[in-house]
Length: 254
Image (cartoon, rainbow, N blue to C red; front, side):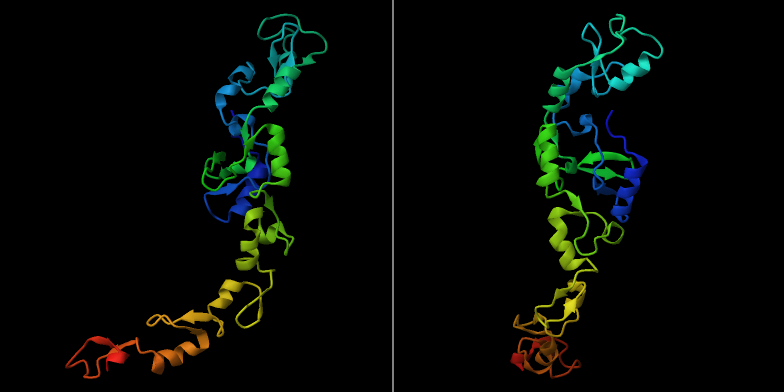
């Protein structure tokens, strides 16, 4: 029951995974209802006796026994009786709309509550960083299409899945500001236009830093002069020399 992953969806998730052990359902695979359901007991009465899974497109015999449409069709290739009551099957089986509506009213998790475990090829719940929305199947479909912040999308700058991979909607700003090689961001300190801001901040001479000794703020280009002659809190070797005193003392105490 449940956690079967197609080869195509597995490959996509591996591509977006970049080496980690799990990846979100970024290619919007159709997870089985038995995987997504909040309370698994509500599905016990709507299991197909042929495949032992939750009924899919249920068809019923004249006595009201329901089975999956594909299971029923495969079954009657061998015999034309209901596998439950052995009654003769009519030429055209009718849909069980009551069960269809019951299943669609079951409370399920948002698809993006799950992540793909590439080691087991199964979808695991992620209660810490997955989407917490639950609702009926129809409510979840609407939520995932229009409102879910965990919904995957491609980078608005590169417009390329191959370049940036899948990105959660809620993480787009972080991606553009710190990771995307196609996103130009002005440095607030020196006004340079950059592709990846956090790499630039390590070398930007106008970036604001603090002295590790006195905690005074200044531009990075001023730090060397501050440490060499201005900062009174900077620790230096005692002026008596290491043969007499090997302690490091603050400059103001000289």
